[in-house]
Length: 283
Image 1: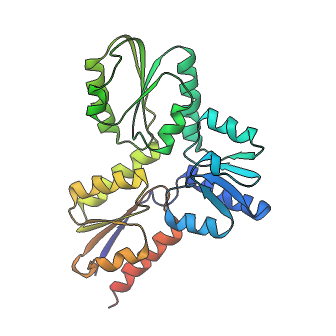
Image 2 (image 1 turned 45 degrees about the horizontal axis):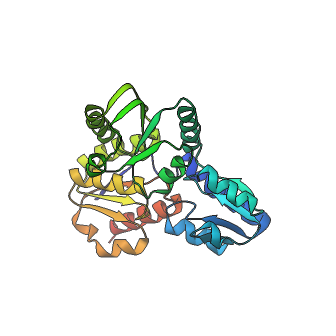
Image 3 (image 1 turned 180 degrees about the horizontal axis):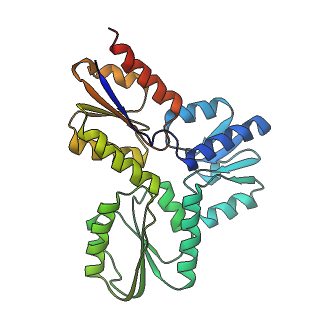
């Protein structure tokens, strides 16, 4: 008899749930909506929304239509203003937690802090945050810091992308503080609590599992981090983006199977996977 360990913190987080439900509501009202980039990093959800009339563009220049959605990752101030000037009615679906970081960065900017964001340089959330201050440096890896031009500053504030691992963030902050000369340092924990909870639970599930299935989009930052964390503990950890990914795995050889998910993974997909594994017990 196979034993399933299903995470308590699983499926959509509040911000993603809000963004998806609001997008569906607006699509029922307007039938056609435009956005830049994916509303959430999950192909199953995006396919569903596109079939209902969501049009995804790569840049402002390509935009068409009357109604524009700011995705859950947020967007910079200048970009929002540019879209508004084009005549679009804008609906802001930025995750409330990310929205708070925008306000935080604006306040730090007014107080003349040099702001350092630790995170992925190309991630839409980080790019959006960058659009709320003119004194921001993004540091993704140690090599970026070695090329850091201004190592003598009056006031420095360090924040992180919401999906970072907290311990990794702290280690990186320590290295930065050692190398920068400043009269004042301000380190602010901007990592999403939901991400931290899922990583902690992922560790506990991986410890007692023969195999772990990490359910979520391959482009989802928090899902990728959750996958690497679980794989460091359980070598048989698999990133499952779509149902067909299960065909590549012989789950019959595992007795204890753990299931965790990223914050943009829909419950209908999780339920399908659980149902599939339970059927294996009947064979």
